[in-house]
Image (cartoon, rainbow, N blue to C red; front, side, top):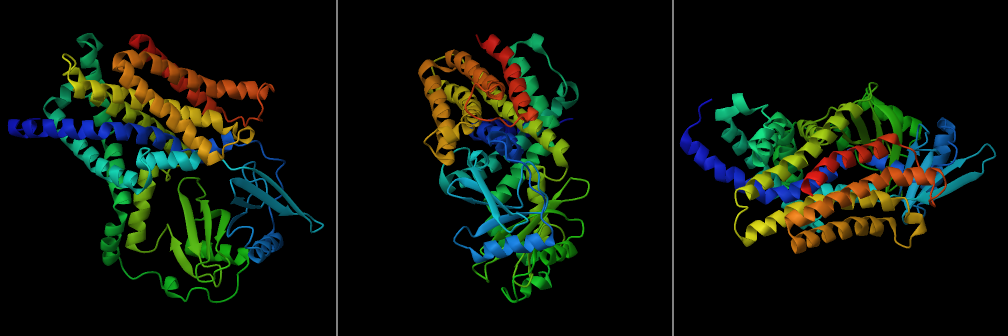
Length: 479
């Protein structure tokens, strides 16, 4: 395909500088984003095994549990009623307070049975890293909004640059052409074959970050809201769970409810119940938000206005929550490949400027190695330490932040001190050791050699080991 030479000259610097500026942020976000696809599984893996699963409540017991929590807002204003009890939801009633997860039920004699366990902070911290690349506060969120725009420009300009040689170079991998040629072929292959995925992530990220101004524009285009939303909030009595469930399923007939999350029952105007579940095929996640006093509709992610449908579509596309576990694993692989895409992009820029003593080149090379390896080490350390939290003095939140930021900052400082070439050898081996330690600690705990009871979730330990084996050849070549 022919592309005008002046267009190529314009897009080359655009692709180069947009890519280089955004790459370090995107490496962290994509590595964390890959893990956020399985936050429930990771929290389950980190938490101790629950006691025996208690029976799911019938309609009468559901009403008793709801009445109890409504009468005791001092316990918590947010709690969950589980309609199906499993190993992950061993009792029909749960709530969180002061870093602990509480579970409760009422036996046949009317007595309350309650137990608690530490509340893992893995999910919350990983989600923060995914949204902000580790930059604290709102600054991190808006920074990633700008990075998402640069990311989209790099994708478009890179595609334009590849068009003239698309036919002969799309699936070409030529290791015989030297290291730079191999990195270039890999970079082009990862970028072009996953282009739709990357465009979706870039666009939806920008939408999420700059949500407030876009919300007003989209609301102006949407038709009138559901009539139920216009009902006066807080009218009527607190409805039984069975009635709320029936009302939610009337709004979204495909909803297969799993749990009901109640919030702020002590404030009739702000009270909320969210009925969550999925479809019969197990693909898309569905939820309906109601006012539990009277049952007025607040929100639903299926049907409703154009604005709701558009915002839900953005969320589903970004997080891959519309195709069940197979799609999540595909997103996981694409996210890891995206991190490799950004890493190889920086290597290509550095490779052209490797000779000489330019300070900016040395600095970017060190930060590229330090950020990539530091993020892997930090996230692996978070998983390792989460299981030891009950034996440590730190809260789960403080432990998760410390476990990530100490290895991440140490890796970057080490790379700046030793230089990228020397640091890469040590840091890659550190990544491999920490990744291998994840399944190793599971095995040691299973035989009683470590002070925690492991949850045996093979995908978590097997994936960590597979990633370690994938990095091993790179570590050998780096040496």
